[in-house]
Length: 230
Image 1 (cartoon, one colour):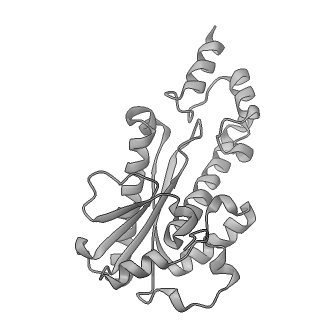
Image 2: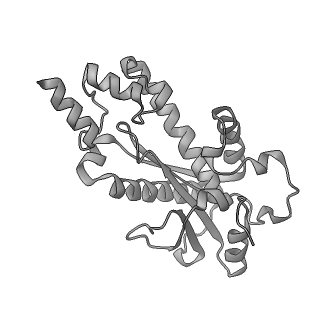
């Protein structure tokens, strides 16, 4: 079977094994030179997984966020909140500089899962028995020191519906934050490149130096900041 499309197949297998809450989690923002890393964790609101749902344009668009336009991601943001419980976690630039981007990504995902569980308990009274939870993590690494079962799924944002949903919400959430930062630091063009190291961003760094939200531990930022001081 070729897994080239995002489906609920893995969630279905895990549900049949007795897991009651299947969480998809993903993060966005490892690569940018500034701003936070943002993670999202989602779990379907219905215990009856939508395996029997007829194919629809909206469910089909719950896929890798990088395969969607900005307009499509914004449209799916509301759809996902309608059908999934959603938790958000983030680590800011200072935390990234202090503990490194990989550890900050793991911490953001743990925060997202904690927020998701809190919301689920408030909204539907779901029991918090760790043995009934399974977390599906995008990538090849599991989250350290997590108290519930988890699976690392390489390319999960492309093939696992719950991870796809998390990737979309994380992307939209971070993009919105960067647009707000643009209002405070318009000289960098954060509304366009969202903090990634584009030529326009590097040129702005060369001209203006770094700002408060730049990640000082990242090589391009520290090198250009040092050049600016000379």
